[in-house]
Amino acid sequence: MRNNARIDRRTALKGLGVSLALPFMESMGWASAVKGKVAKPPVRLGFMYMPHGVIMDQFWPTSPETFLTAPPPALESLRPVLDQCLMMKGISGIPISPFNGAPHALELSTWLTAQLPDADRRSEINIAISADQIAANYVGALTSLPSLELATMPQTHKENQEGLNEGYYSHCSYRSPTQALPAETNPRSVLNRLFGKSDKPGQSLQADPLDRQMLDLVIGGAKDLRRKLPQMDQHKLDEYLDSVRAVERRIAAIEYRQKEAAMEKAGMASSKKKASDSPPIEIKIPVGDKRSEYMQVMCDLNVLAFQTDTTRVSTYIGSTPNGVSYPELGFNDTHHSQTHHNNEAVKSGKVAAITAFNISQFAYMVKKMATLREGEDTLLDNCIMMWGSGLEDGNKHSRENLPFIIAGKGGGTINTGKFLPNTKGNQGDLLTTLLACAGVPLDRPIGIATKQISEMKVGI
Image 1 (spheres, rainbow, N blue to C red):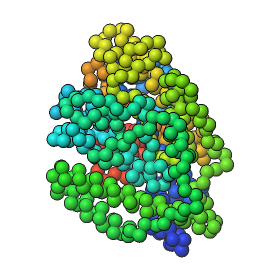
Image 2 (tube, one colour; image 1 turned 180 degrees about the vertical axis):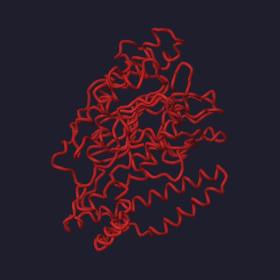
Image 3 (cartoon, helix red, strand yellow; image 1 turned 30 degrees about the vertical axis):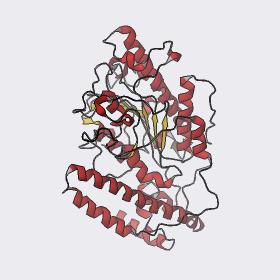
């Protein structure tokens, strides 16, 4: 019956010229729009990073039963929205051999790639497309910005651990295996980028003449070829496939935009916002150098970008390895220096305070999202926000239980309000599952992934 209904809609829309775009529209949550109802809001993906790991007994909940009522100190700022969060202990990071002497070069660069750099080309960027950019390739054509990359610190850290390119220390987003994406650190520049001179009124988009069936043949044939290639050639083919998919998504998005007005004229509702939705939040650029105010305005910009559907994918590097200090917390010691605490109470206490501070900025963002109405739900209900670090313990550089916090229900796909203490999986599995929950199809696992983490999902 469902297949027949889909065929009927396709036939009904053929006169409007949207039949080719229909599968893409349905996959992005627009099926209700083509059936004459208000469309379901899209799912957004956001990632926020802190280096150097955590103090474990201050971060991990003591039990699933006490997760909501008695959270550990590091999570206290999230208490009002813990029922909309998910935590899992047991997500392992990627083993870094043969780069054992480069824990800080790899903690951020592997965080969203779940893959090591090419050991034979260490001085060059050559790793993998990151999870955020896989998502951006799929949904980025639908918004004025395919993705938004933010950072608190300039991405200029220089160190030569294991001869690796300096870009690995300060970048988490990779448009392709060889192209690291820079992040914006100036809030006013971000605001200008979101709502400045990028729009071009009066110009209409023209459909790309490429044949969709030809793209399907290219992708289908490439999948068959990939299984027969050595690993190095697989990476080259993957990069090519990603560019083909980006073209495919952009064609479908252009078709949708061109036909949305025709659908409205025919009496079919579009995906425009409801009158009951919260108005866009106000952005105030801070004066001075107070770190919390700076991070909060960057979080506000992220919220505004999602709220206005300027982008649906974002990353925010709260800080990078080495160098950063937190005088706002009453001490000037650098974060990195304190992580090598050797269980000294004073130093480990400072690391715990830094962790709680960074999580409180994440909490500031997701709590604001929880107050903003969007359709029948809230903005947070329609987001998947991940906070985390690329190390478990900065003292030992361990990676067995990477700290992650997932906030938001992902449009009803994420099993929130839980702490899962015995999860079996790696960071590639986690990223693969998050993208699946966001509706992003994958034809290959992300990095070292071998599966999806079913207990994360609603109804599993």
